[in-house]
Length: 341
Ligand code: ADP
Ligand code: TRP
Image 1 (tube, rainbow, N blue to C red):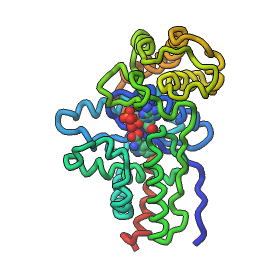
Image 2 (image 1 turned 180 degrees about the horizontal axis):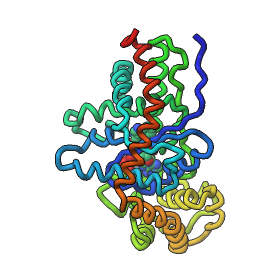
Image 3 (image 1 turned 120 degrees about the vertical axis):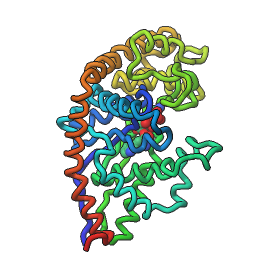
Image 4 (image 1 turned 45 degrees about the horizontal axis):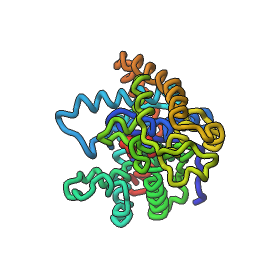
């Protein structure tokens, strides 16, 4: 059999847990928007991943609301759902079907290496759900059920994408289907692939950090954004003359990278412009830029969320279009595995 060449296709997703923040926007969403003009894209709200850690009767309403909120954030950031299907994962059952097959392809040794599972569970591994452990397998299925070739994400997802390639390769070998699943490329680009906490330059900005001051939420208002930037931790020195001067200064580096990503500039350009400035003046320019870029997104999210039925229609329509791609690929997987003769 000759290897198949895949046309370029992009798939990415975010979990509907808590509000999205600047790291999600600069590390992922902003790149998703840019890719729409270059390739066929699908953008998923990974609601099945969201129940790996925190679920149950009391979470039902919040989960349903978070799915709409994340979909609204995608659209408000510039994803055009007419062009790129926006849907929630659970509406396309082929994700779960393929994940089962992949859980029989992936090896325990591969899963044991996943650092994010270790970070998320800490010392309490026995109490974690099995779903949290197999989470990266479902992620591989999210991607490969569309035979996606490119996945734009932040730096923290690199290891999961390596696993996705390993699963694709082993499936193709085991079932004598060379090239059936593409070896997906991670797209980890821009000056802000790892946005750090505003309180601690060595920690990733995250939805789950207890301190709300550590992150800028996409829904924060102008005053909150400005105050979080003003209070962001820095060191006492002025901004450096060159990138080399940022060594050992993670907070300064983080703010420069955030500025560069928001302004669509190279970090070098930003460093040159602010060389020798005090943080106070740099921070007020950064706050102004962040407010100008982020508050229109929040306003558009509010407008979209005022009509939940319309968001539900968008998700349903997106799922139908996604399924039209996924179903024939799943049929072929069933044939390759031998479920159907
Ligand atoms: P969180 O880590 O805040 O829970 P998710 O795991 O849902 O966020 O991440 C969704 C997307 O946003 C992924 O592509 C991830 O790589 C990206 N992302 C998350 N946090 C950051 C960050 N601090 N900097 C850059 N990208 C990030
Ligand atoms: N694991 C990703 C995260 O925490 C979310 C995710 C699930 C994802 N499925 C995906 C990202 C498929 C890209 C492609 O951010």
